[in-house]
View (cartoon, rainbow, N blue to C red):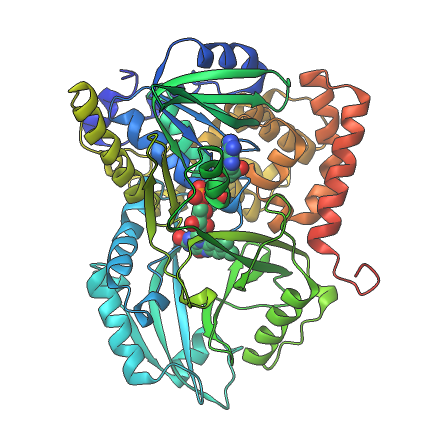
Length: 576
Ligand SMILES: Cc1cc2nc3c(=O)[nH]c(=O)nc-3n(C[C@H](O)[C@H](O)[C@H](O)COP(=O)(O)OP(=O)(O)OC[C@H]3O[C@@H](n4cnc5c(N)ncnc54)[C@H](O)[C@@H]3O)c2cc1C
């Protein structure tokens, strides 16, 4: 195991300022792609992880911090599958109580506070309002008991315990609620995050323990030794070359693609995946000015979130069967109309229209099929399949439960290592490993740091939102971006800042193309889509300068981004 961070882990379970400078030594850049590929093909690993979504990222951190030598490969960008398309909540899943999934609620409910502690700048407290409506599916008495059970299962304490609100109190918190039919509300604690950033920070944290991770690297086949999986054949989707990674064990954390890899391994039998699509729409906050997050039921019995976030509000989600192209999941007109009607129905003063949609995203839940169950009845529990040839696959689960999922599957590898090699590995300790960017002990320190960053940037014309964005995206790594910013010479501070941010992404976060940057490292395509339009050319020019990218490639990226902008935001009737 790397000794670099071990001392810090042991001493105070927190990053010291010195460690931020050590993190600067951990470059994670496609500028070093060739040597990274070479090192992956050289010595055998203990474990190869297929898939750089939250499941694979969590496994890489758990396994490497327990002393295993780990390689992770991702066929697209990190978090380009489901893990950038969730509702972005670290939540207990109140609705699973209705399905009597107590075990799931207990595990993910308890995980919320742990994950918040590991990255308080990235997993932010978010109070949730559950309105009780005449004719709605939630009565006062049952909701009160349900939320109480939720608190008990998740061991919620102090101010975070649920409150039952009278109609007047609920309206004071959220005046947009339907006054005529409102009976009161439940009010309880959850957390909000950025799923793609949670994924990349887990991967980066695992680099401290010497994980080798590569994006745009697709597993095409398995290597076998005595009919047992002994590694993977990978195609580098950038350079085009094939290479092999040898390993004692292979875990497929390929999300919606798990069954495809089981087919490659000739082991797709028994349980199988059931994919359901979920869509979110983003509106300018002034069009849907909710003051706070609301979780409401719609006439068909589903539940929808409306979540304010910076300059926008997003709503979701749908839950429909899906069997089309997994690499290109889009929001249909029917999805958009469904969500807009649900919102307009719940908030009588709001009259959203298709033209108001600023952005959107659609993702697939990799759930386990259960005969005769509807999409929303399918359990969100995770499962592990081990094939006769030893391929371990993990599917199902939730973003919130990633840490425990990782621990469970690595425990299985530990048992195998004992059987096969008589080797012992340590217990999981990820509950005590702060993620990259964190040296905040409490959320109040995050808030203080946002104020500090704002004070430093205010004179250059940056807003409180800009400071909030930097800190909730990058935590203390904001310092590295501000160092980049300080040496740039462009007149316009916003141009300087985007260049500084991009340089950080290229040096430390494996940003390979403008989509990685605008969609998954910064979330701008979803939450600040206008900035993508205005900054696109600056970012393309920076790619030319830093990577010496040729004109044809730049033209391809420009049109790919324009397509993304169109697909995510244009729901006008003439497009459809
Ligand atoms: C609409 C929606 C809302 C959700 N909301 C929440 C929420 O608010 N909170 C919550 O806790 N959970 C939520 N979830 C669930 C959560 O998002 C998922 O459980 C989680 O993101 C799944 O992560 P994963 O890593 O297993 O899959 P993915 O993120 O899809 O990762 C799998 C990765 O494997 C890669 N891959 C596939 N094949 C190969 C190959 N051959 N070689 C290399 N790489 C490969 C893919 O490119 C992909 O990036 C939501 C899910 C959806 C769809």
